[in-house]
Length: 332
Image (cartoon, rainbow, N blue to C red; front, side):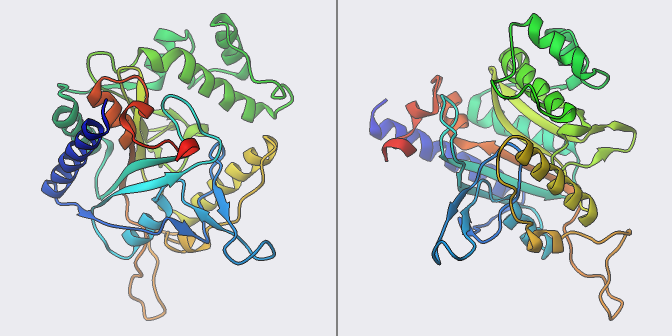
């Protein structure tokens, strides 16, 4: 593609995204790219920037605008979306780069069913698809990997992976069992399951194992499942999200678990995002100020993130995000 055709396509897709979210009643927002806080995640490496010298705590290029957008939600922003530049160290492949564009949105008082309608409409308008297929992790893993992650032991996942010709990366054999379980789940998902999903129609994959909940609520009707989703189109993971967990103590526990996994994998533990934690409700059904009035806090609802470069790639029928970008991080 020529530079002009790439720019035209990206502008057209960006305009379509904005029109859709504006029409649905969302407000477009901007949040800082650089912040002293970062949301610790087990397998995402943020990029530290030492604005004040090596002796002072760093700022971080944001891996996603999630933490900052949630602070806006806690302040009463209502439905919001953003097209943000995001940064992650060490990510380079046909669908990854260390700098990329992320579409992220939050819809208070909504569910995954509401999110499915937004995703269906977005894919229809940008990619020309029709409908959306909603499946559970159990359904697709049983079909394509021969194992149900909701009931599988570590040995079950190992067996399924070995039957598919997979193995853990070197140095992972001594991982704690719970960390190894997650690695096998993620390898099977990436190598065996993902290539089969979204063929002909977008697939919304739901009911994730609890250890894969990230910051999603657990399903009250089925506590062994998290209210998380990922969206796949033509074998490409395009988006992910969840019904948000709004409890401060649960969020803290999830962050602590992510840091433990980071340490087990030889990565550094990341500092607690204290401002984000303060934006979530304290234990109990309500938070109140000393005057007895409720304080603002992160509302229940759905948050989602979509790889904008991947969306443009799919719209172009290309096989890599590099084909629909004028710059790559390694050659900017």
